[in-house]
Length: 318
Image 1: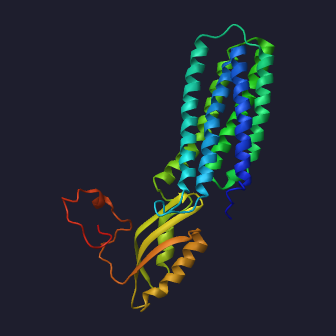
Image 2 (image 1 turned 90 degrees about the vertical axis):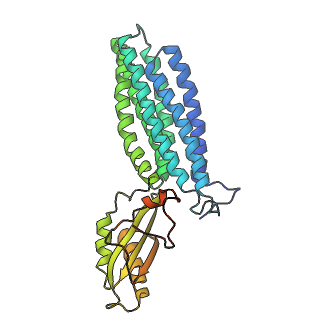
Image 3 (image 1 turned 45 degrees about the vertical axis):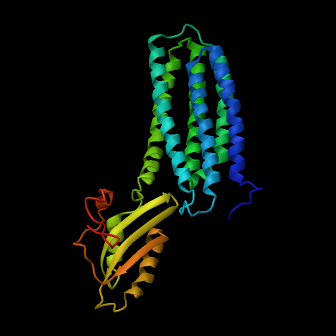
């Protein structure tokens, strides 16, 4: 259900609250990290700064996604969330690499003194706030790739804060300041490991790959098992965003079994919807098939210079 312009959705309000809390965390950790010379705190604050951008991006994408389709954007703005997730995961990966560089430098040039108890206290406040923001976003993260990206940002920051707390405790007990860059390297591994799946999933959607939970061969086999379906070709399956899966294909009807090819439309749509969860379908029924057996339509000819080859009147060719 759409929301009126005067009544923002609950998720919008949670994102705005998360932005406020995260802004306070960033200020406190940068000041605390500078004062205590803690790379762990500065790393956490830097990651939080990236999160602030991620939250802004998630909020903007969430607002865009609620807008209806237009003549210029016939799919609406649903891809905005995927783009936000891609950028969020990319910035997480870049941030991890930068933190690793600083940590390696600090390993070679360790500091003489870091006040471990102060590091623990500041990181503890950050941990509570980060877990709080993540809790606000947890429900929306279940089905929305965009919100999941922001949620992962906040969870990673929360666990980074836990690591910094342990680091501060270790420094307070042993005075081994080298623990500060070491814990930063451990946190980099956690950041990258958690960011890669989101990066890959959002990139696959932007490249219009077949959703990973769907098997093209299985779908074709199921369609061709319908009485009267002789062949499936020019098949394309992709996602606008994880919850919106699209399918287009040509279906060659066996006119000896089913004299009226239009009778096949209903069973095909029902099968795709019930078995595979594909509700947005474009099916072209045919009684003749000029293709030689290719399942997937070769679109390379569409990228050729129009002067090389005259345009053909029909929509597809191989």
